[in-house]
Image (cartoon, rainbow, N blue to C red; front, side):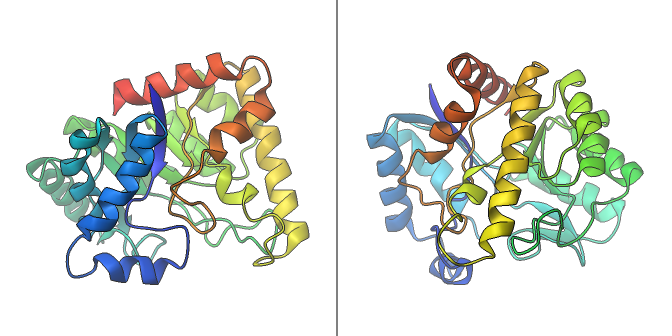
Amino acid sequence: MKADCHIHMLLSGGYWKAAIDRHREAPDLASIREVLESYRARGYTYLRDGGDRWGAGAAARDLAPEYGITYRTPLAPLCKKGHYGAFIGTTYENFREYADLVKKARADSADFIKIMISGLMDFDHAGILTEEGLPADEIRELIHIAHEEGFSVMAHCNGARTMEAAAVAGVDSIEHGAYADDDALAAMAENGTIWVPTLSTVANLRGNGRFNEEAVCAIYETAAGNIQRFAALGGLLAVGSDAGAWAVPHNADSEKTLLRELLGKPAEEILTRGNRAIIQKF
């Protein structure tokens, strides 16, 4: 089964505001069909969406069977008010509001829950995140509430301590995972956390002039080394490109190519195992 375990149907690989505007009034079914056809033509049969609050991913899920594709979506990602993620997700202020949103996701037939628990990389400054992660006890409760409702949990998560806290709390998959350290990688491996590193979001920035080139290359090298160390620990690695993000088009297979180059001969076995774990959980 050819899979991309992290895409955004809402986004187009270019300017995010323009992409959202296309779907703001209602999902643009013509463009969604075009994207689904591009995946079908390249042999994809499983896609996992990172979610959006405008219904593009939900519309894609409805259409995907026509293209022979199993499509999974959390509907809207859930993010704490005042923190990263509001541009694409639904916000909450406290655990009660979060629990209500999880229950609504159940009523609306979400396939899983996606939580936003950290900022993202500052691509002009290696080693820096736009904001630190949520406290460990808060992360634990978010995951617990979703699990109690029978959902698997995908976490947008960067930073070693945030990754470690999410893994220990039993998160099902970690997306991106910038700036892991040995303790975070060990916690993920020991707890069976599936890591979807979305390396394309960094690799595809090299040489395009949008960000500081030295910083981008340093971020890439750090991520590549962590992926190799996690594989050596026997950790679960899945292929997810974050297609739709800046410089990551839907019509490319860059993520698997990058991971194959990093992992060498065992890559196919490693990535097949991780993809199967995603498909089973999500």
